[in-house]
Length: 356
Image (cartoon, rainbow, N blue to C red; front, side, top):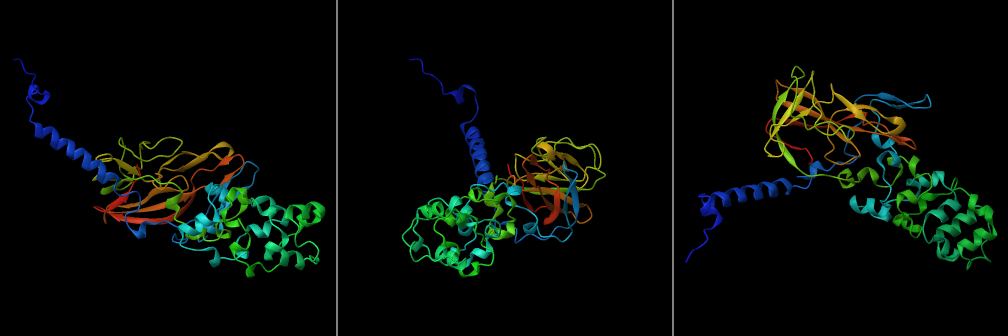
């Protein structure tokens, strides 16, 4: 009786040859993804953990004005929620990620109350208008501080109260001691997406409770590590295996001169690839009316900032990296050029997060 030979016998290749290669590729893939982005606690990136800007700079705006930053300036005092495109997270999201609670922060630490009025608050926090006056001590004390007698309106719904007395909508929180009230004093405040608050675009990072402690890794992150194999100075040229660039041009933008770089190993996906220094090489970046040039680099931690190979030292086999941020407006976002913010240094043989 005629029997069919197994495929591997037909090819006259040993079974274990294929089995071995299969195991190799599976293990390689698992090892690649086994570290989702942070391999130890000291790799968590927060605004609080970052140093100040190492250099000042400016960017020309369409209205003949300039966006300026100064050496020594803290990022949290410069960047706004709009610059980071933080829209859907809530104060509770921030607090939970930074191991804090509502009780740790008071309303005067939320810059929103320096810009908004009572009407904004009622419209911004979902469901707040349906509470009765007597249910929220904060509201009672606030209105009393403005000279209103609430004895006859304790049972009134807030939406009916402001409908009957529309002037209440325009009351601001200035000269009212917000430091006596924590974030839970207003029902639903901490569960409201930041984009629902009036003036959210102009709120600086430092004006949002606990945002300086929020892991920026949580805003969007890839995965994948490699090892620094070589550190090369700017005399190197040209390159043909780049893994650096930008969102606008892709991440394989090569260099023809002044090609300081690091070469990578230890990961089959980037073995022999070149991460080119952005200190000497720029690429197109930004969008709309704010488009321009930015240092070449990568976004292993997502779109909120760019990681750039900055200084390379062949004598010490060491590379210094830096972070660059952007700012945004109604007509677009700038290139990633707000920096450099000194980040991490690596020696040959050390692990570096490249994001894949």
